[in-house]
Image 1 (tube, rainbow, N blue to C red):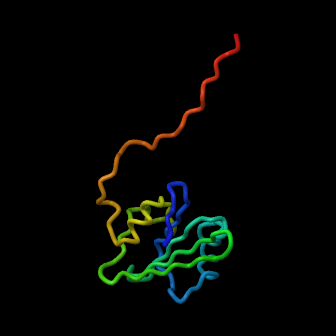
Image 2 (image 1 turned 120 degrees about the horizontal axis):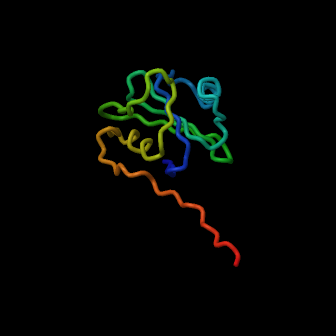
Image 3 (image 1 turned 90 degrees about the horizontal axis):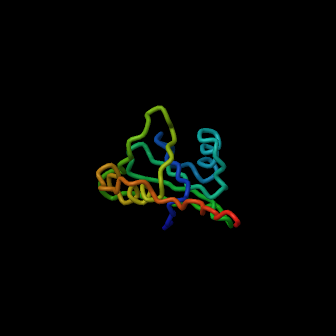
Length: 126
């Protein structure tokens, strides 16, 4: 499968898509609805009408990749996002949780902000 890092851009489509769609049609949806380039390394996640199947598309630098997953029991549980958006930006961890069929909302997460390195303070020349 894929192992996205925390810096991987992941876009999840809330609106179900026709699962007969191949990479090119899904990539066109990305261009039209999200205004994102499907060939920039971002990951795009789509679902069928019943939320029992998911398709992921991304470009790995050498070619187009499409992954298809069907849950044998249950449905994919989407995180709460604004109902006004057809697409939502999620992180790589949420992508993996969703694909496991787990509920991302019920996970206990550390509420602290992520650590970001601070620029070094330069000592003034004496």
